[in-house]
Image (cartoon, rainbow, N blue to C red; front, side):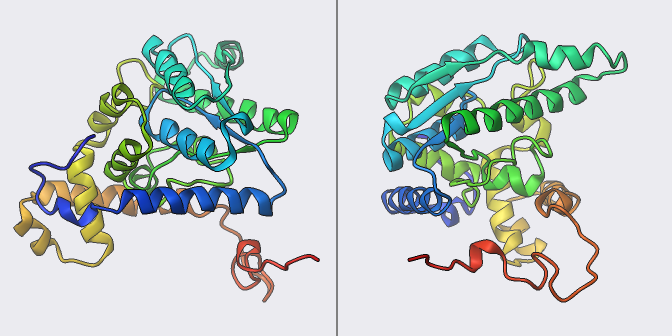
Amino acid sequence: MKKLYGVPGGEVLELDYPAVADYLVQFLRRELAWRGFEKGLVAVSGGVDSATTLALAARALGPENVRALALPHAESSPESLADARLAAEAFGVPFEVIDITEMVEGYARLRPDMTPHRKGNVKARARMIVLFDLSVAYHALPLGTGNKTERLFGYFTWHGDDAPPINPLGDLYKTQVWGLAGELGVPEKIVQKPPTADLIPGQTDEEDLGLSYARADVILEHYLKGYPDRYVEGLGFSPAEIRRVKELVNKTHYKRHLPTVAVLSSTAINEFYLRPLDFRIELE
């Protein structure tokens, strides 16, 4: 299991992972039941986040009530597909492969100015089209896989990876997902592989972000709790690292609040009117 060895201040991220696993299993059962679902869908990428979500779903709903969807593109790494299959096999979950190449390339051919970055976003959104369509076909709710670090950094495709309505990992930093994955028995090969969105060939998360997840997570935890930069520097982090973390968080707030609505009344949804998740009437 990955640890934060040698990362200053890393102990602030330690969790009671058996307790976290139990809580998240109950969370999934409760949230699906409240929405009228007994089954879940997980888009498995071959990475640790989707494998961990799959493990939780299998434990919460029973593996027979969960479906793992691998949604490769011709440019995707073959290793990603193999590891997605490995995760499904590890937890006894039915596995389905749907190639999205034609969906993506059909649109890309209409746009000769298409860049690798834009095509990566198209891939992520195409996957959500398939996921939500099969949600209807299988009467199974899509489950999110994004971790807290990605969400805070805005390191996800808008209206893509963030689309599923229930996300058990959304308040766990990437390093904490690694810890939970070890608790749940995610295959070590998946836990240890370098994280990648696999949207652009050769891409890795930490190269994109400009620092390691382990260092980013410790800075994030202190920043969100209001510690001054001088304190975080004193732990052993550079001003450049701290500045990079703060910039990524502060310039991506819009991606975490959708949509921004012009408020004209005292009953504006999510502004004054109670959010549906806060106001649950028990029906007899």
